[in-house]
Length: 134
Image 1 (cartoon, rainbow, N blue to C red):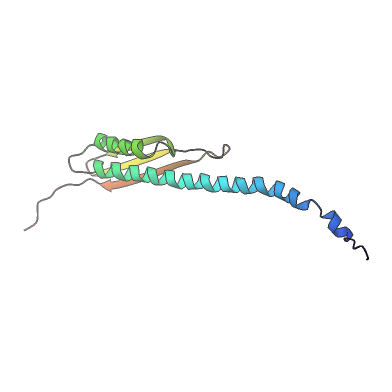
Image 2: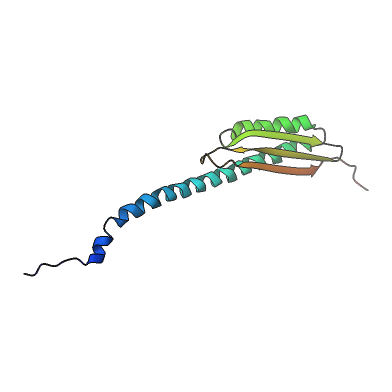
């Protein structure tokens, strides 16, 4: 019975899968963590936008004040945003005709070298009751 011998090229590729796996695994894990980090950034932006919208809705009511909007926005941030949106800053401005809200903050870190910040802005006219025209 003749003894079959492997070609020389097969001997050169021996162990290549282990080296490829050692290089590819950390890169795949880094990619996965980057996807999670950006998903958290999108979630934090949604929280900031929700707080801005809620604060604006309160602040633009007819007899409301900027402090009313500030309190309502802070209440939403306290209830929802503490885990994802870090260090949120909420600013409410109200004049006789318009109200505006700005919310900004950081995103919780998954990747230590990536520092992301989000912000949201909402503006609207102040509500006024008017007499109907006859």
